[in-house]
Length: 134
Image (cartoon, rainbow, N blue to C red; front, side, top):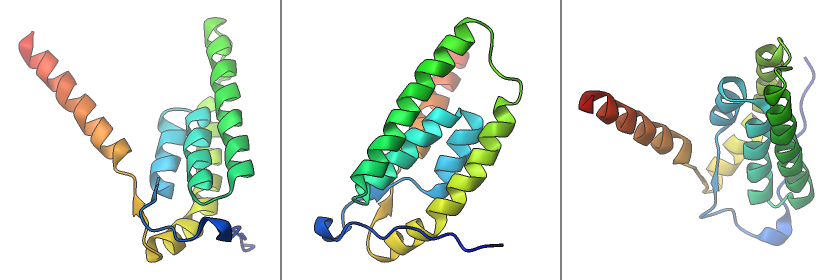
């Protein structure tokens, strides 16, 4: 298997200390379980946090356009049957791209963003509370 090269962070940004990134596992999970555009948005946010603004912005736009396309496909009942398989393949690739860069960045002082976990827990608690009220 060939090596994947990961671009180095932009040196003009200085230190990564204090910045937060989504872990590759979180991005891959959201790509598979939610949809591909959400994975593109999270990956784009990571790239922007590392100082790769052009590629980060590109991934953010791909995610936004993907959401719009997905919305119109869903409105017309035309979603592709293989969308989960496509999301899984994309998740594997983004995980491979992010893994080395994320591990390197954790060693330099960044911390993972807690939002996906805390947001999911908060949503689960609200659903449990609603179900107990009924």
